[in-house]
Image 1 (cartoon, one colour):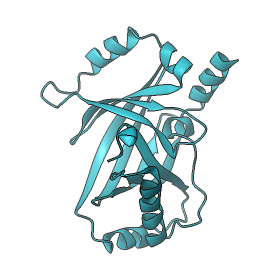
Image 2 (spheres, rainbow, N blue to C red):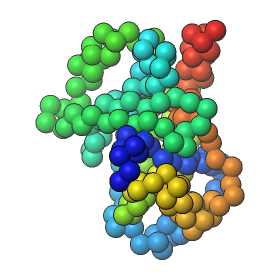
Image 3 (cartoon, rainbow, N blue to C red):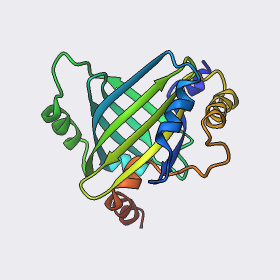
Image 4 (cartoon, rainbow, N blue to C red):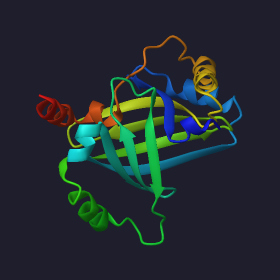
Length: 197
């Protein structure tokens, strides 16, 4: 792995509509021979702090059957390549929502939001392909994401993503450049705009 890419997330996200042929997509991904397939329900809690606003990042707290992470993700004009640093909190102490809230409050939270996701994940040696439906209290969206997990170089990681896109019918499709919180929380963009102005 290129050490400069160690804390980078390299992915393409596609917002899909009601006409999307999910059974055909599932068949196409399964035909590629994933090493593992998973399905999980996730609750993601996002926090924008004063420092996060100034340095353009969100903090995400995720607790599900597989992961318990506190994550920093950068906000930018395009989510194709962005910083992602995960701290594994482990499952031994449960969700720790109260502790995470107290920790984040001390960092000066200026915005927070919670979303729920139902994911299907196909794991490959070099890529994760994910279909999910995500919802907040005011919006919902369905997406497909392709994330390179082998990152020997940026060019190779992007080529990996593109190879899976081609194999599943997404080659040439228009991808979203916005983060999932930006898609589901209009008030996040409003908070960012107010503080930038």
